[in-house]
Length: 430
Image 1 (tube, helix red, strand yellow):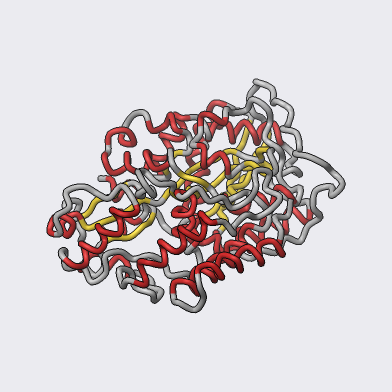
Image 2: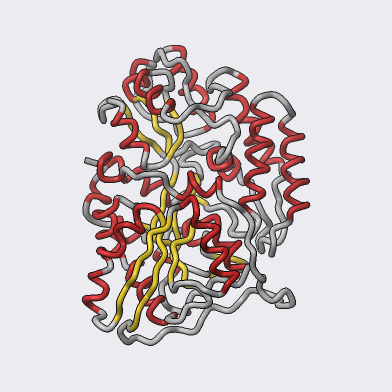
C-alpha cells in the first residue's frame, strides 16, 4: 500500500531550516576565478579499503546492512556507517571540515551543498562517474555550486496538492485544478460548497514557508539568483505577482493565517477543517493514520499559472565525498553504486525514499502506483533552491517577509523589496 511504503519520518526539508548556519572553516582559495574543475575520472577496478560514511536519519540506521550487497561485489572493501541525527549533522560536518578530520562519504541536505562546497570541504565529482541526464533536473541542480558538481542526488522529495476528493465531488469538482485561477475557485468551492472550514491550508510564514511560496514564484517565471549565482534577484515583477496571489488566500479567508501546531494539519484534513494542502510524500501515511481513506483523498500536481503542472520544490539528500577523504576512489565507487537505477529501486523498497534517478521509476510499484506517479510527474517540474553558501540565511529572510505580508503587516511590494535588500546585503557567498 502506498502510504505505508512511502511513509517517512522527519526529512531534511523539515530539519534543515532549523540548522545552524555557522561554518567554522577556511573557505576555498578566495583568489580563484571561475568554477572549479570536475575531478579526475576514477579507475574501473574494484573498491578497496575502509569507506567511512556519515548518513542522517533512518537512512543512517539501515545503510550499513544495505551496503552489504556492495561489499559482496567488492570483497576487499569495508563500509562503516555512522548514523548521525539531522539535528546535529550540520555542526558535525562543519566541525569535521574545519578540523580536516572527516570520514569519506556523507549524506548532505540539498540546501547545505553550497555552503560546504564553497568552504572547500567537498571533493568535486569525478568526470564520467554518472551522467547528469540520468537524474531529475531539479535534483541535479542541487549538487552544482558555481558551475561545478560536488555530489550525486541520492533520494528526492517534492510537494504536490493533497485534497479531499469526497469534498471536491460534493462541491462539483470531478478533477483537480490545473491553473491558479482554477485553484482559487477550487479551494473556494471546497469551503462554500464542500463544507470545509478552510479550502486550503498554506503556511502563513514561519520556518520553511518558502518551500510552499517559492513554487508559485517559480511557476510565474521568477528567479532567485542570476545565472551564475553571484547575485540574488528576488525583487521582480514575477515574484511580486506570485506573493500577491499567495497572500490572496489569507486575505479572502480561504487559508488560516495562524501557524498550526504539530499534528493539527493531519487531524484537520481528516475532520474536514482543511479541504486541501501542499506537502510531500510522507503525508500520505500521516493522513491515513488519522483515518482518511484512499477513497476520500487524492494528490495532484501543483497547478501552473495558466496551465499545469506548475513548478514545485525538490528536496532530499545528496551524497558527497569529503575533500580530506583518505579513500576517495573507493568512496566515489560507493556513491556510484548507490546512484545505480537498480540500487535506487532496491533502496526504495527498503526505505520508501523516492529515487533521484529517473530510470528507477520505469518499472515496479513506482511506475504502476497512480499516487506515486503523481510525485514522479511532479519531479519533472521541480526546482531546488540555489546551491549557494548563504541560502539558509536568505531563506529565513523570505520566511519572515512572507509572514509579514500574509498577516497584513507590510505590503507585498515592500516585502519583496526587503527580501532583496537583505539578500543583497548578505550576498550569495560565491
